[in-house]
Structure formats: C-alpha cells, structure tokens
Length: 250
Image (cartoon, rainbow, N blue to C red):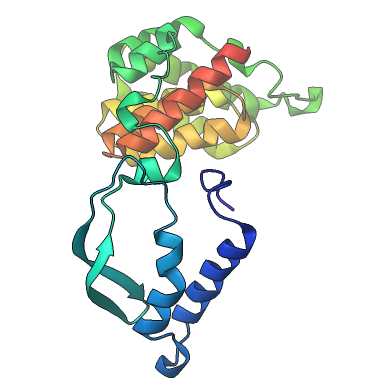
C-alpha cells in the first residue's frame, strides 16, 4: 500500500478497492461492475475520510473511470476535501524547501549553459581524468599508435584555439581507431558539438564518456547541458543534480 495511505485504510479495504479496479479493467462489458455496485462498494470508503473540520458538503458530479467509458453519477454527495488533507501530507507550499547545494565551477557553468566557461575548465583539466582508463602493452606502441596520438594532439590544439570543426574531425579520427578509449576526448568532442549547435551528437558523446568512466561527473554535467539544449529541462535538472552528487563523493 502507498505509504501516504497507511493508517487511513485497512488491508481489507485496500483489497476491496483493488478488486473493484480489477473488475473495471475487464475487457468484456458484462464482466465490469455497474454504477450501483461501484457506489455501494466505494461510497463508504470515500465518506471515511476525516472531515471534522469540513462539515459542509456539496453535491457535485462524480466520475468513475472504466477502460472504455466514463460513468457520471449525478448528485453524488462529495466532501470538498483537498487531496493533500485526505492523504495526510503537507500542503505543497508548506513542504520544507530543499536547501540549495553549492555547485562547483563546472556545475555552475553547466547550469548556466556557459559553453565558454566549460571550455576553459576542460582545457585546464587536460587529461588528468583519463588516468587508469588505458593500459597498453609495449607491442601496441606501433606507428599506428603514434599516428592516432598525433591526431589527438592536433585535436587538442584545435580545441584550445576554438576551431571546433577541426577538433571534431581530429578527435573522430582518434576514436575511430578504437585502440585507446578516452573519456576526455569524448567530453571535448561533446562540447565541440554543443558549440556547433549539434546537441544530439553532444549527448551521445557525453554518454560515451560515461560508459568509459561511469562515475565521472563531467560526463553527467555535459549530458545536462545537451539535454537543456534539446529542451528536456526536467531531465537536464536531474542530470545536473546527479553530477553534483558524484562530484561531492570524489
């Protein structure tokens, strides 16, 4: 039973409501309860709510939903009791506000969608968050490895110079080889895509960074920015909060 309802209704009454709801979901109309049965069964439960401070009643239509129709019961007495009072929970405006959690510089920049500030932070952190994500044997240091590292180096140079299109090309060359995985490269390419007004691609790169480094707050922060750019503001706020929590744990 929902925790908000515990203590207001017995298990037997909850079972009664469950059985009525199950009957209402029957496909065959003849197997669903009629209006009289619904009123007889549910009426006593409705009047059980504590209305000592709300002695007046009003006659309003009551609607009961069945899967294929709405049934209107006219002149069914209904107490005008706010739902929060019936559930025994605080009014929304009375609920204690959640104290705002101070954001880090990265979190603050992402919350403001300040791409320039995010760029400065990623440039300053360089590749320190990549430590431990790659373990290469001596045999892997081939000419091909030197070539892809050179591609990354060119991407880094373009990234610092804010030549984001070239940076995307160089980072893509580095990532397509697949010999090394770098959450920082994914994060940098994600930001480049944001500057190029490509939030879908930015979101994919940020999610790839998370796959490589699951607890990396930067990956979550960049996802929040991309989600905001995609007008998914609730998801963006949730992601920003999760990123902040991850950062606090480090």
